[in-house]
Length: 458
Ligand code: SF4
Image 1: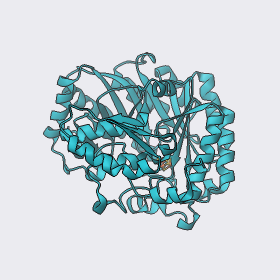
Image 2 (image 1 turned 30 degrees about the vertical axis):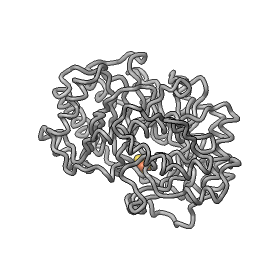
Image 3 (image 1 turned 180 degrees about the horizontal axis):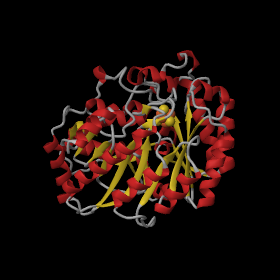
Image 4 (image 1 turned 60 degrees about the vertical axis):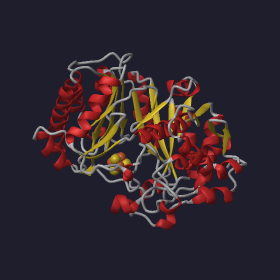
């Protein structure tokens, strides 16, 4: 724990709050259902106003063979692999629908396969999907950044080889924690040797950026477990390491997050200490803390972008690609046209039905107001660079005054510094970045602080 993070300070700021993958946060989106034409008009506005043709694509592949009890994702548990083909067919259809809206005026610069478990799908199905999307058998990895989530238990040599040949150079491995007791509690058994096997083979094939995703605050996880997990991770020296806080939201995720006792969860100071010790180990091993929850070797693009203040964040996480539009394909995927958000149907059957009827299968979303767009910019800047600047020309100077007032306690606690129009999160304030963003959030006020809506900020 750093000197500044005294237990009382953690108690004070450990509250429920959004993770700000979008602003406004999803529970404050206003359009449910979101009419198709409204959403399309924001996509068209982006195309006509943007001076860049570059877009990002996120593809949600929802199937998993078994349920991990820590999981907060939209997934469908099944061992039946006949679901693969109709789902890939629907993704291709959905993309073709979008292409008519995008009118061929855009280029995919970045694409991520997430889930669920992308490697639930056979290498052949994934290859078929990619070649249909790009209308090619391979892409130039210097022109398009392709990445996928690899489940250590079912990523085969064929997956790694075929996707590499298509142009993939990045993958992320879901590690969580190596202690067998923790793995048993989260119902995800994957020994270090298994992760190492996939990691080493990816290196042999030629992947240049491997990320390991760790989680702190898991049931039964103790300090010795996270220390040993970080040590083992450092043995493999991935370019990037995510150190996510376990988000306990059983009221949203239902029985999936009830496979253990609440008393098994480290909380408050105990949980924060798991993060602080891990962070120290990573910094000592020459990783740079990049934005919230992320670390990268100083030579990695993400670290370089962070230092050059070029980092961007979207629904896929931190990225070096600054595209202003992201199209999400697949069940529950979220799209972002910069002027609006839209989420696809959350059930596989509803998604398939609507796509097969020729629809864009969105079911809810939000059209951003001018004020939303301004607040979104500030929150993005805080999340990526730990600082933001109010413009003198902004029509929202009264809102800025209110935000500064809301930040006064964080200023007194040494977590935030305000100099003129600049709001800066101090080194000691980094663990509290979500709390700082909450002061900017126009949907939150003292009477409306969320309780059972969001995970804890610390
Ligand atoms: S953590 Fe990943 S593999 Fe496990 S149930 Fe969730 S989406 Fe599936």
